[in-house]
View 1 (cartoon, one colour):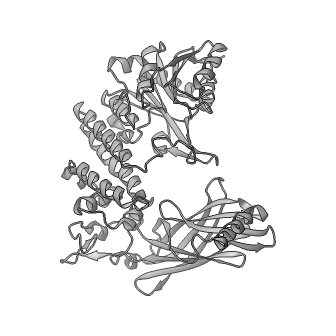
View 2 (cartoon, one colour):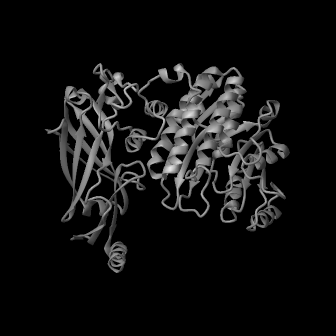
Length: 533
């Protein structure tokens, strides 16, 4: 017997997404009897989406289709349309290109009704397509069940700006007039969730997976969250963050408002700074000027908490320079984990600083920070050899802290990006080298990687020191003859293994491995093209 009577409405929104919208609606219907109604709002599609929804509704009385005669330009208006017509005590939101996993509604409804809460939230996973690799969104928030009498009891909630991984009491939203921004308003989720937290709901959190966010990076039309190449996207993001902060502050939620500002530094600023070296000069100039203007509103208290946190340090550099500068170094600092790469500098009084040109950006806390939290810099130089790959690692000194800690070994792990559990590990000694560096070398057999799985392999490192302390770091891909060049190597097991070391989006080292004739053909095709051109 099903534990819940029909109590939940699922609002599905879409525009020109005929390839996926019926899958989304079916995933909502598949939640079982707890779903009383599915309101599908078609935002003036021209690709036949509305017809597909009509045919689905003809055979399913729980489905209601609403069509907009004019496209709204955003996600907020169709969601508001759905909110206006739902009759169920609880409501959820679902985008047309995503799905609700089985049991999502039951998990959230059980939590909400059992603890009498206004909001129940669960784990969202980002599923990369076509690989199927899943990355959890804010997993720490949903590690275990919890009931919060007020959002301030878990300030980290402001980091979960998604509206789709939560169940809301319909009366709670209507009582407080909580709606989405209408029209073309990118990142409307940030504003909606700020309005939710500003209303001080009682909240239940569950560790269950309740939403699958499909990430299609090769799609013809990128989602707003992926289409970050234009400066207007950054302006929209900062506008949404400022609006969210003002909502929380205006509601007297000063603690949450402060955390929202910190979240911008820790998340948004790091993400866009990491991509800055990939943009053209005009974009960089406009991005830098706009970011300086935005950060000018921050006060001393915003910068005082952990001034060496990567986002805060990036923000301090931006404020200290009128023009874009040190972009490769900022990209490394924005990586996860952060790397503070050479060159290192000291101010006139000998204290650590960002650079000789920006001595006002001080780094004095580095002198006392615990070794496991230092932003260590490690370069990785790959050199393919017969049957394998020789990897040379170089750990850089940092104001004397590395020598003081005494690095001893580097634990090297090659981990397959899409296959859980596929990994190759080894531990190699670090030895002192010239110029205040420590080096280590290791060889990985490509046959072994290829047998475990073809595709992308990432390298992860852990540096261990003489007192037993350790620090996880990422390996910066060092430019050189071994990087980004495809090589076909003979293999007794696979005949031939194709390997291409490359730098990831954040600058870390990775490998792409393929086997057999299928893997070699693209290499031969590329070489032939270069010969002919």
